[in-house]
Image (cartoon, rainbow, N blue to C red; front, side, top):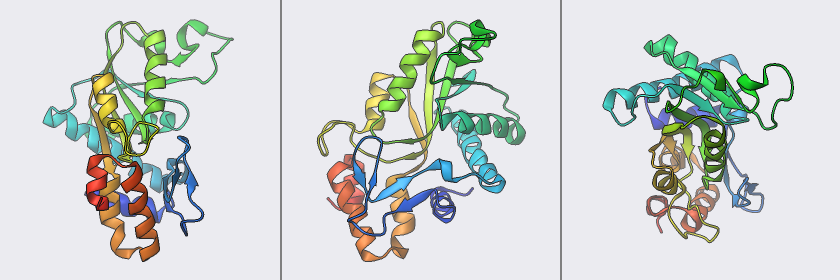
Length: 242
């Protein structure tokens, strides 16, 4: 996939990136915010779309490793639920396309109480993890960052001295992490500061807006910009015209 513009058009064409038909019917996000735009990787369920998605993650990882922006790591980690298939797809495509072989871990929402409990009671593949090894967390989107902190707390409580090399998401919504509008640091910046690792995105909301805005009805474009004038990071407010 050539770049953010092509990725944005792919998401829209496949129904993974949605825009509310009018301002009176916004999407309610996990954070509780009412947004005129919504990204749902769960809409990408056919084989062709999954291949495109897998390659987008794999290409980004390979490029980041080559540039040195991402330090080498041992495992890809997919937080339940949506991060699980995304990390698996990225892991397979990373090897098939770039000949980079990494292992894959994911967590359970509820602890396993049967079978080989020692190996995968909470994190599947934990028995292959060695103290101090590094992980790259894979997920679909970042809004407030709360889910990423929760995932890391679980990892740190189960695995022996894990290290987080970075986090990679498909879409960074470029929103503030606090409860008050436009308050506090952006979610990505807060994660980088508190977890001491870089956060990368295949596409950011500003790039999605730039790619799609020319074809949007004025009311949808206005609602989109108004939301990010309220909830966006300084970078998002800049492209939203705040």
